[in-house]
Image 1 (cartoon, rainbow, N blue to C red):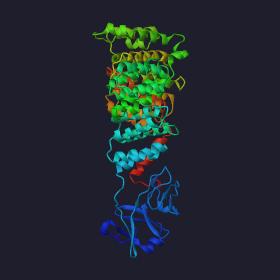
Image 2 (cartoon, one colour):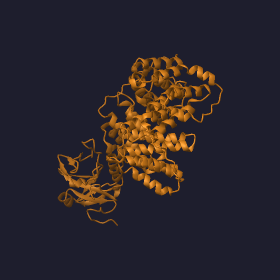
Image 3 (tube, rainbow, N blue to C red):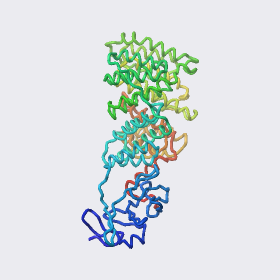
Image 4 (cartoon, helix red, strand yellow):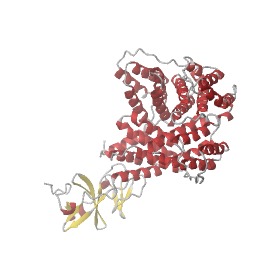
Length: 590
C-alpha cells in the first residue's frame, strides 16, 4: 500500500493520477518535493495554479525546488536555466526542456499523473537534441544526446549521419578537421571498449559543432543537367575546374557524376585525380580528407554522396600546391622529379602489365635513404615490374610510420606535425588504393615517398627501434605503458615506444592494446592530429605485410600519444557529467 505521506503519493487512481498532497499543504509548502511511483517531482503553487515538473534540472541535475518562480518562469539557481512552468520549455539553449506532469485538484487534494504519454519518442527526442547541440555548439547537450541515443539502442550510424549532414551543410569552406575527426572516430569504434564508443562519438560530433560554430552555411551548386556525357569527360571537366580554382564549376560537374549513378570507384577516381594533379596539397590534408569523406559514406550510405562529396571541392580548389613552395624546389627540385615520374606512368604501367612484382629486400631502406633520385627510381622500377599501387602504398606507409617511430624529441615540438602529415597522407593513399585503381593514385605514392625523404632530418639521429626480449608479464608491461601517458616528459615518449614493443613481444593481445590506447586517447583534450594518428596506426597495423612492420605503426602512435599527453581533460569532464546525469546521480552533491 502506498503511504499518505505527501512526499510519497498514496496509491492508484483511475486515469493514472496519484494523490500527492492536500491542497492546503501543497499551497503552504510550495515548492515541495513529492515522490510518486519512483519519480521525484517538484510541486509548485503559483498564481493560484498547481504545477509539477521533474525536480532535477535537465541541465546538470540541481533540485528545481531550490529555485524560484516568478511571472510563470521557473529558474534553476545553479546555472540560472529558465523554464516556462506550465509546459517546461526552456528559454536557454544550453538546457534541455524539463518534463512536466498533468495536475488535477480533486476536492481538497492535489493529484499528479506520473506516467503521461510522451509526445516525442526517446529516439526522436535525442536526435532533435543532438541537432540542437550541434547548432548551438554545446558539448554537454551533444554528450547527453549521444548517451540517450545509445541507451535507446540506436546504432552509431545514426549520430554519425546527423553529424555528417550538419557538418556538410553548415560550413561554407566545406570538409575540414571536424568532419574528418568524426570519420576517424567512426573508424575507431570497432577497436574501442564498449564504454568508450560513446565517448568517441561525442568527440567527433563536438569537433563538427566547434568547427561549424559561427560559420556561414555551404550553399550547394546545382548539378549539370546533362545526361549525355560519359565519365571520362566528366573527370576531365572536374580536373580542369579544380586546376583553375573554379570550385563552383567543379562542384556542378561532381554532382552531375553522382546524379548519373556512376560507380563509386569511378567517382572516387575523379577526386583522386584532381587531388594529385598537383603535389602534396595542403601538406597532404586534401587527399586525406577525400579518403575520410569516402570512408564516412561507407558508414552512412552512398545515398548521402550528393551532400558529402561537394563539400570537398572548396578545399581542393583553394589548396596550397607544394610545387609552389621552396622546400619542394630547393636544394633538389623534388616537384620536378615527381612530375617527370608522373608523366612516365603510362609507359611504366604498360611495361608492368601482366607481371607480378616481388618487393626487393632493400626497398624500405631506399625509401628511408638520403637520395630522392634513388627513391623515385625504386618506385618507377617497381611499377614497370608490375607493382600495384596498393603494394607500393603499403610499403611507403610503413616507411612513414618509421619516421614517427624514430622521431627525435630534440626537434622542435611542432615538427611532430611534419612527420604526422606524411604518415596520415601515406595512410590515405594506401586506403584509397583499395577503393579505386586509377593510375593517378601512383602520383600519391610518389608524393608520400618524397615527403618521407623530406622528413629525414627529423630522424637525425634516428631513435633506435625497440627490440625487447619479451620476457615480462604483458599485464605489467601494459600498466607501465598507460602510466607514460600521465607524465609530460621527453623520456616518457621513448619509454612509451619501448613498452609497446615489449607488450607485443611478451605475447600481449593486440586488440587489448588497441582498446587501452583508445581509452588513453579519448580521455584527453588532444588535438586533431593525435586522433588522426591513432586511427592511421590501427589501420597501418592491420594492413602491414608482416608483424614486425605492423609493430612499428603501434610503436609510432604510442610515442606520438605520449608526446601530446596529459592534457586538462575538459572534454572528458563534460562527458562524465553527462554520464552521471544519465544514471540519475546528483552532480551537485559530493
